[in-house]
Length: 355
Image (cartoon, rainbow, N blue to C red):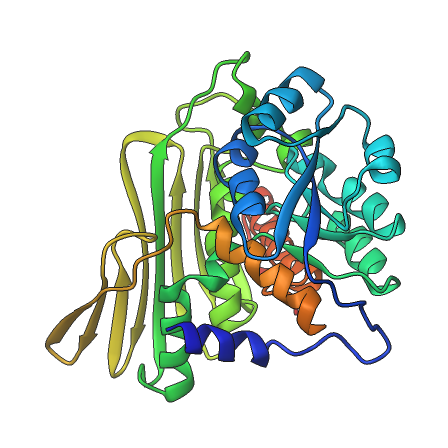
């Protein structure tokens, strides 16, 4: 599987020849945002990845930044982003703030000459993402988005099955996610239910992960018909999203996402004329592969910290002068699909997704 991942990343292509990035032995990181995802996954990955060092932490809540820095023995702490860009020892910036700040901070970091890795989704909308995509295009910096599932063993396995034609003709894809999410206004995660900060509800938060996998495997859907609602929680973002999409080959995609059930389910299924796979659940347990009536359990475990391969891939991208696993232009496709979903739900009509 390690060889398969390496081959997959080589096939992603190198950075175009007019953009030559100076190779580095070790990447020093500035982490911007010291919230939940930074504390649990990002900061440990930046610290533990090969040829990577967490050099500085920045958060407008300086006490929160300092607490995380103390926990990880990081010396450089900032409350001001511009000061961090100017005075830290960082080569690269990891943006782990609320979504509404992603593109602004990414653009400022790129313009300051830093490489950039941004948490998902890349922006509030497709148009918002283009700011960062354009900034990356005019610099000689490496820039990517944290859609880490593109490096998961089960994603690579599905990609290789498609390349070998093992599915036959893909005829259906099914995506399901439901859980309970109801933060109080004083909860640090409450920003996720404020549209101006998050870009949307369950679809922006969890749906984008699954949209990215869908796009990575099959390309941008041709069209979507969607329904979004607030069935339980009265926020200005949806707690429910259901949709049907059509892929370029005519296959149907059905998807349902809920933040309003105290049960839990997270599944992804690809059905072909010859074979199908089920990720039950999406990120853990075996991949269930069915060929005819023969059912196999394929053990493809994820690493304990799923952000670790993401950071290591980004560091290797710098060293090998290639694109990371999910360049910004690719990440923007997910936001454009999300835009189409919201447009369909608002107008109660089928919407063409575009390229």
